[in-house]
Image 1 (cartoon, helix red, strand yellow):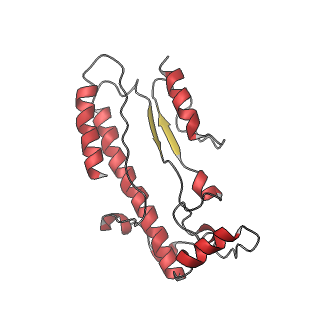
Image 2: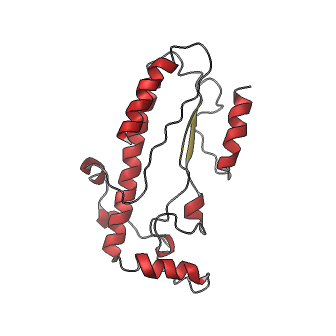
Length: 183
């Protein structure tokens, strides 16, 4: 992730010097397991203050057997303390990625193209983080795998910046949206 962001920052220097439109994709690997991050991000979260998800104790008896097999073969061996630690590491990884993406925004902001550059920050999938006793994306069957944040910044064109929109949007919508935005 550090290497990817450094390459993006370098690329922005040359891209923003040209007058023609450009597109830059910055693909971080995280926050995939094993959720290894610098200690300073772990220090942001106290595992004793991390609640277990409301669905953590779901027995999955009313769900397909494959979900129960996944849970029993992988995640039931974790204690509640270890589950909280795993959630802590995931949250820390997200904070780490936010800081890395901040470096990309800082590089863009140092150019004269900030106002007219559409920026999207999102993930390709979610992580259960203990929902239904599961982790990672595994079998995409619950909202935790589908609900991902999408943050858009486009100072010149976004109406009411800072607002929150809770409607469901598919990642498949992004390509046509970018094409429309680019005319």
